[in-house]
Amino acid sequence: MKFLGILFFITLLFPVTAVACPTGMQFNGNGCSPPYEYTGWDLMRDRRAAIDAIGSDRAPVDYGKYLKTPEQMRELEEARKQREKEDEKKRQALSQGIWNIDSTATPEGNLCAATFAKYTSNINDGVIGGVITIMGFQQPKPDAWLIFQGVKLPKPKSVKKMKITLQQDDEPAQTLQVFNYRETRDVGTIMFAVPGLTAMLNGMSDTQRFRLSDNGKMLLDIEWHNAAPIIKKLKQCAK
Image 1: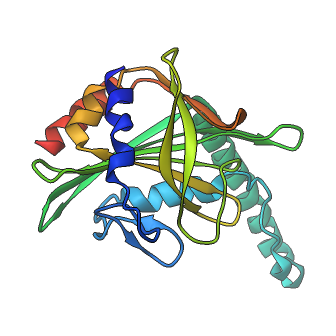
Image 2 (image 1 turned 180 degrees about the horizontal axis):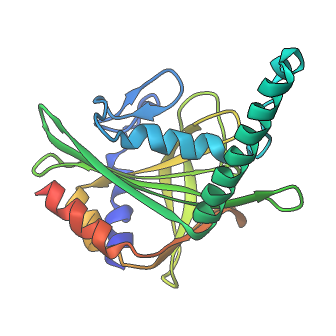
């Protein structure tokens, strides 16, 4: 209930004027993003790669292979088989769920973030699952966000506000106002603006299920696991 209580105050953070990105975010031409780029391991790059991978099981067509020598064709075939093995490992890992965590120093303090990607994709069922991002600044800067991506989430061409119903585990569901925009052509984003990263983390648990719906229609149902060490690292980053 603590985390739901934090989210309840989100509606107070929304201006009544024209729709824009939440405080601390900026419009990047497509959606909302933090004003600072990650360096090193680059969490945002990996998050984008996970998002782009949703529903994209088709291998790219190499039209140039028809111009290759027999030896080059054999090398290409070996490379294709190796790539398929690696892709299958990635699909298996994503079907179980993968955590990534990173932080970057900014003039306003550390910007801390973690993502949990869990989804499967096939012809019969389509894409099941999505990506969750926890992101926020170091104290005392209050800007923090809980972000969901999925193929069934609305994909407006520009950032807009909408009401979404969120239920966590077996807690009572709450209908809240959120930011919504298109991450890619196939993936929509729902962003909750939260007053403080530490406060948000205090309401999170090692295993947690999130269900997002709109007027009774289920848009995203995803459960993370093994979050305790991630939460601990994010709390250390947020101090």
